[in-house]
Each structure stands twice: as structure tokens, then as C-alpha cells.
Image (cartoon, rainbow, N blue to C red; front, side):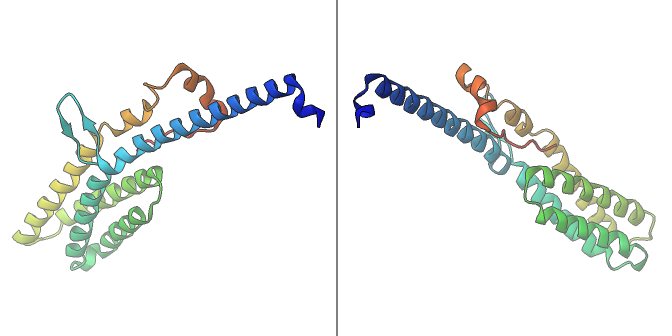
Length: 185
């Protein structure tokens, strides 16, 4: 076993171990940064300047799903718009089943179109005063949640998750196969 007594071999092994350990450490740190940024989708974004945590996009999506369920259930009582109400319920189910942030975005857009289509048809019906009030309440909450989603700082944080990372991390990122956080877009 003369190879283990060779000084050049020992230096080569040490260099190899240091390089591999550095790469694994940088990869782990970047993965953690990505996970932390993506967690803001579910927990909300803390705005240090205002000392305030924005409600999360996930919470706003839950508000929208709740409104969609209530509104569609109310409109199922009208046979002439039953298919639009079913389309809204179907779009809501797609959003519930969405697993990734990108899928949630697509499902939210689909639910938006279904909600607007149902609301437009419902306004043309002879709704009772109570139903009209409910329609206005559901629409207000539904659209308000969408405005809150649009105003969320999550996408900005997701794009800039590596702003504070070292130059070495920026150089090595393409070689370490680190996926950035998914944007809600």
C-alpha cells in the first residue's frame, strides 16, 4: 500500500475532499435559501420597513376558494346558470388539487374566469335582494383577495432569493442544480 504513503496522493485526496465539501455546503445553503423564500408563499412576506407581515398568497387563495364555494352553491338554485356554477366548483377543485405554486397560479386564473362568467350571468337574472347582497359580498371578497395577491411581495422575494448570497454561490449555482423558488406567475 505504497500509494497511501505518497505525499502527492494525500494532497490530492485532501483537495478533493475540500472541493466536494465546499460544493455540498454551498448547495445546501442555496437549497435552504430557496426553501425559505418559497415558504413565504404559505407564511406571508415580512416587510421590515413597515414591520408588518403580509397575508400569504396561500391564505388569499383559501379566501377566494371559500367565496367561490359559497357563490356557486347559492347560484346552483338557478337552473339557467347551473352549468356556470358547476364550472366554478370544478375550477375550485382544480385549485384545491394543485400541488405546485405554478399549478396554483394556473388554477387560480381558471377560477377567476369561471367566477366572472358566473357573476355576469347571475347579474342578468332576477335575483332576490338577499341574493344580490350575497353576490356583492362574495364578489367584493373574491376580488379583494386577488388584489392582495397581486400586491404581495412574494414574487419579488422569490426572484431575489440569492441577493445576499456570496459571489462563489452565484458562480457555482448553475453547476449545483439548485432550483430557485417558484414564482406565483
